Image (cartoon, rainbow, N blue to C red; front, top):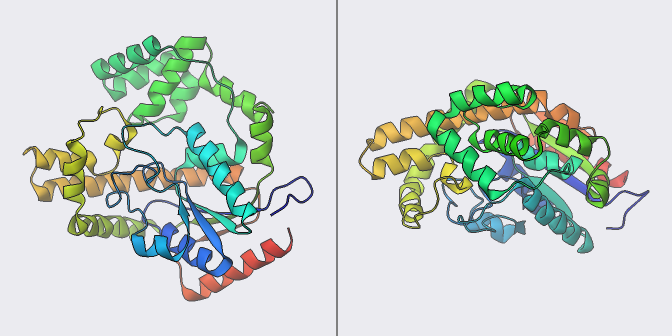
Length: 329
């Protein structure tokens, strides 16, 4: 699709917390509007965990094109910047084929990178990364977070003590540059980022935002994890562990990996492992809902619809609004 008035062709973003029905809605939209579903989930991008990350199954993938699902081996890191480059390429390819790109996922950092672009950031020497990792290992998340707060109170206020990856990133940037990561990010928001930022700003987006009631969402999280166990998640984690990957890699932090690994090593009963994994999933869903309540409004400036629970009548309303969006481009 050609750019109109300086903007690219349309993009639909389907987001919401885990287990809120994003994948099924994206599939229905792709069927209805000749679309391509593009993954925006930071764990579904890895090849080895199809079951445990609730990746769309083969039936769904045969019905409509799905992109960036299982695209990378677990031994690699997929940063927001790397994903953004891949996602923009898939969006451009969909437009070139006359198809509607439907970006589906709940990783807020990915969505922000796609819509706002990436701010400039300093190169971080490997020694600084190793030092930060060692310090975190010695102190633990809570004490490391407190130490970061003394050096970079702005970033510390934004991060949870359990958010290891982003805590390390904030520490590394401060150590390497003497400036807060928040300062670097503000440079991008103030107009930095060059052509890549302009490409993001050119996207014409319709947002679909799932906001289910907490009780129903938590029940869905619990039920889905049991379905994963029945579907072979334990064997999937067993196979992952045979790769002997660095525990610091993102894939090793996927929901359920730590708990099921503890069961496989004899540290937990399967019942306890499932209970702990369900709790971790609910905690993650809660953090996603907080992000969507506090951060998403600044991103979703384009047409948007929010919904609690999908129904046939609501789907009809969503389809009607998307048709209007496509016609007014």
